[in-house]
Image (tube, rainbow, N blue to C red):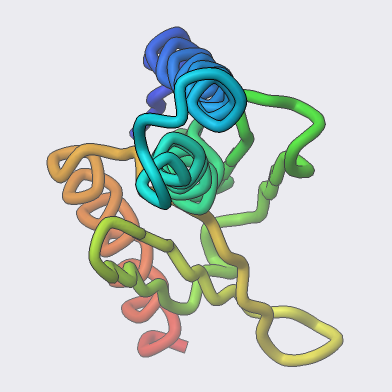
Length: 160
């Protein structure tokens, strides 16, 4: 199964650009109020605070683009940001038989995928992916696919 929200990258770029324009307009409105009009008092700091907080929330949600591929004998995960220099992109590929378990953590508007794989050196390794920008249906499809792999691995291990 393949899952990707790469086609939504222009929307995320637009939202990011719009938020940057709000920050710029907020700075301009704040400076105009402070040095020219002086209509608002302390409330003028909201011109700075609100757009900056919206931009911070947008980027704290994590990497926007998530790609998953379970076709063939390997699982392939890619997670990257729309702004290349902001975060290092993640790319992991490993055989399906190494998948031990996974967890999807959902806290308010932040979603994370934790994948535990078997490792020769340390026994197991946990990989973290940010899936906040996936829809509920895409998350359910991802869980369904990962459940199939985990179930197949458990059945193989029971036969041994």
